[in-house]
Image 1: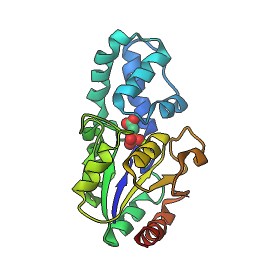
Image 2: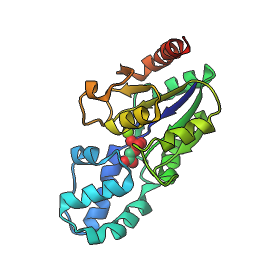
Image 3: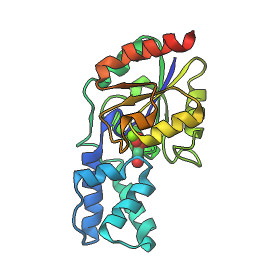
Image 4: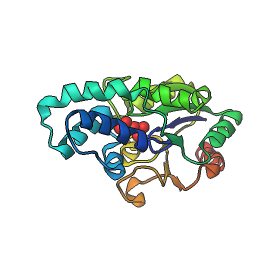
Amino acid sequence: MRILFDLDGTLIDSVPDLRALANRVLAGEGCAPITLEQARDFVGSGAPVFVRRMRAACGIPDSEQDRLYRAFLDGYETAVDLTRPWPGVPEALEALKGAGHRLGVATNKPWRPACAVLDHLGLSHVFDTVLGGDSLATRKPDPTMLHDGFAALGGGLRLFVGDSEIDAETAHAAGVPFLLYAHGYRKAEIPELRAEAVFDHFADLPELVAATARAHAL
Ligand SMILES: O=C(O)COP(=O)(O)O
Ligand SMILES: [Mg+2]
C-alpha cells in the first residue's frame, strides 16, 4: 500500500516552534506575542497563510507581507527544538514500513523546514518522498500534491492520513481514502471531515491500515 501523511498536527506537534518563531518575528516589529492557541489556529494552509494570519492578529498591514514572510522563512529551518512526534508515531511508521508499505509526506509546510524537522526527529529514513507547500504550484486542498506523491511511491492502494479539514478536502478531491488523527489541529468537528476511519493513538494505526487495505482490496 502507498500511504501519504500530512505533517503538522498529524505526525508532529510543531505549534510550540511555530509560535516561538512567530514571536521572534513579531518582537522585531514591536508587537505583542501570540499564544499557543493562536499559533495552532494559524497552521494548516502553509507558511504564507500563517504569516498573513499572524499579521492580521497583530494589526500589521498587507504591505509588510513579503518582508515578514522572508523573515519567517529565514528562521523556519532551525525552528525544530520544541517539536515532538505525537506519542507512538516513530513506532507506527517503523511498523508500517516493516510491513512493506511505501510511505511519504504531503505537507503544506515548506519543503526545507519539513525535511529539517524530519531529520531532527530521526524520521526521514522511513519516507520515500516528501512534498512540501512550495514543491508545486499549488498547495492542499488542491489534490495535485497527493497525485504527485502517490505517483512517486509507485503502484498499489492509496491512503492519506491527516489531521484537518484541509487534509479531508484534499483526500476527497483526489478520490483517496482518508484516515483522520483525532488529536491534531483540526477546527471542524470529526463527522464533518467524512473520514473513512478516525484514530486516537498511533499504536492503532498499523491495524487500521491493514483493515483499510482489506476493505479496499475486496
Ligand atoms: O505549514 C502548514 O500550515 C501546515 O502544514 P501541514 O499541511 O503539515 O498540516
Ligand atoms: Mg496538518
